[in-house]
Image (tube, rainbow, N blue to C red; front, side, top):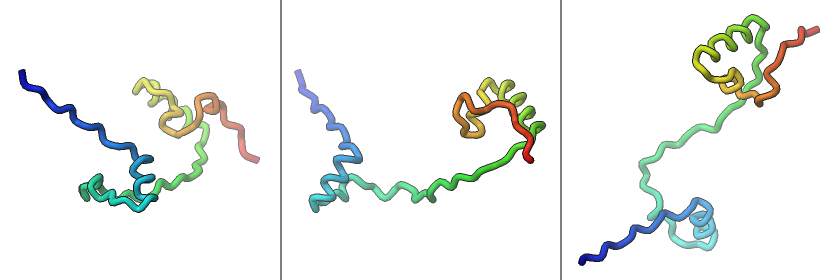
Length: 84
């Protein structure tokens, strides 16, 4: 019966970083096929009460909670207080 070699798992990003810190060559772990991504930019947006109602309506149609679309925490998506 033939024996098959088990493939090695790729090392974690942390272990690759430690290897690089020790001065080891880590180029074999990179293929140059990836894309450079710009950092995420967060913005604050104020919604009117009618916009929030529309967002809730659409999100329930899509069967997703509205906070998933606005990056709120699950208990903080409540009634809007009028701005003074």
